Length: 130
Image 1 (spheres, rainbow, N blue to C red):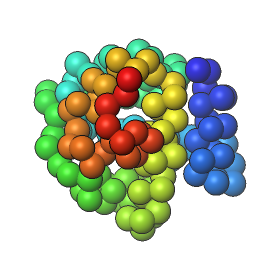
Image 2 (spheres, rainbow, N blue to C red):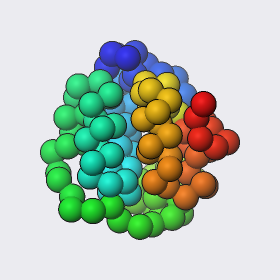
Image 3 (cartoon, rainbow, N blue to C red):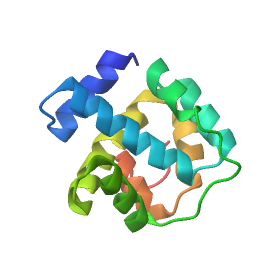
């Protein structure tokens, strides 16, 4: 999936007013996700995302994944975007469901397998991808 198509889907799902807003939300959500999954998985995910987002994911190399739940995920997204936690949940879902469309099923399974089951719904999945 190309960058413009990716952002168009995020913008539509998140009901954002501009492409710039969709891009900013995308970057912040992906940054929080990159804190939660292993460094190797961040690189694998980055390789399947449109170039600017994949490159941004790999700018900061972390030594290991942090262990935090879904509420902390929302809190971190909210903090970075200046939104409320409920809005952050909406934002995360708009971005991560688009990630699910943009990457292979195998890659999606790898990402989701590193997260508590409560995260799967953000990717538009009840469980692991087929």
